[in-house]
Length: 433
Image 1 (cartoon, rainbow, N blue to C red):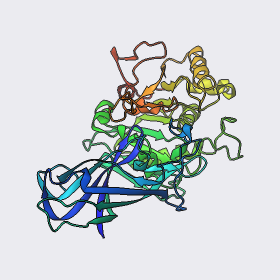
Image 2 (image 1 turned 120 degrees about the horizontal axis):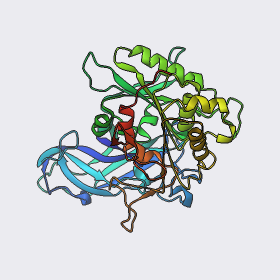
Image 3 (image 1 turned 180 degrees about the vertical axis):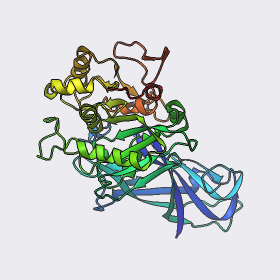
Image 4 (image 1 turned 180 degrees about the horizontal axis):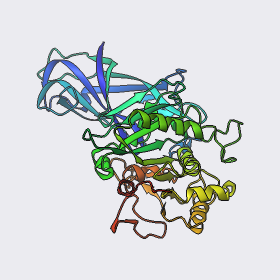
């Protein structure tokens, strides 16, 4: 049997296998290989238990709400195009490698690299892929009857520059991934701490970086807008909202991880003190992570320069006046979407925003989205309209630096110019409080 490489695309909808790269015994020319030359069969299973992947009703995606079962765990996977390539999948006129460009995205379940693994968390799936040659290749008589069934390598260009710590100890209580910016030896850069949602928890720190497009912060465009920034993504073993008492979610504002997160940030800052600006430490996160971003801001207002809580889940009715007084000192930019049925904005961000404003917060913004559609052009519905995410997915425009207005529709202005969140962070420094 022969082996293949797979290329993973990190998108607004998650991580997908987008390309399969085959190494042939002969050189082939462009036009001699087509989608009809090969068939691709894939089986997706839980990488721990081996159980077939099924779509649960509680998965937070439009497709999950239909509770469909067909084509989720195994099936034939459509090839979009085939061409000669180099070993990285880049097109060539002639080569002994060919790239199979696969259909992928939120409507192509077989392409998804992640799936729900337990009640709250997601994980990478085990993908058993078999590529079978089903037609001869003109001019390549030695390439016949080929079957590729072993993945020898995974390519993910968006992960360039990322590193991961997979062990924990007293000094490093959490696993984490991090990105180091390009910088001169003598200069110091900001640190953006991003806290994942419920699905990103567990024991593999790659998942909270790859499961959503956190690499938007490390992309060329993201780094340019941030002015170059370190990115730290701690991983929670359970949920940031875990109060240690087994309380149902959205019933308490307590968490056993508040000090743990601060310890992780302090340790990372200490290990990279020569390269990180201590006056530009930003705390941000989505959903379950937005909850912890608010808790960090309330607990350590003198430490963080700014906060970006996205679809945050702190119950405002349980927030004390002391917490409001602390948080109002931290420049904050909330992002949420109307109609969010996972985290109700009328119980969380809307009253919290107003309480902060009423308390005299000098710098608090709130981007309130009407809906969230795919803006990348990658994903469309069968009728050609842009793919629409459920209202909870407010992190999608955040990763793309697309939030630029306040809840009344007016532009957010910093130093006389309209800014998105990335530019706003770049220009925000910790005040002497």
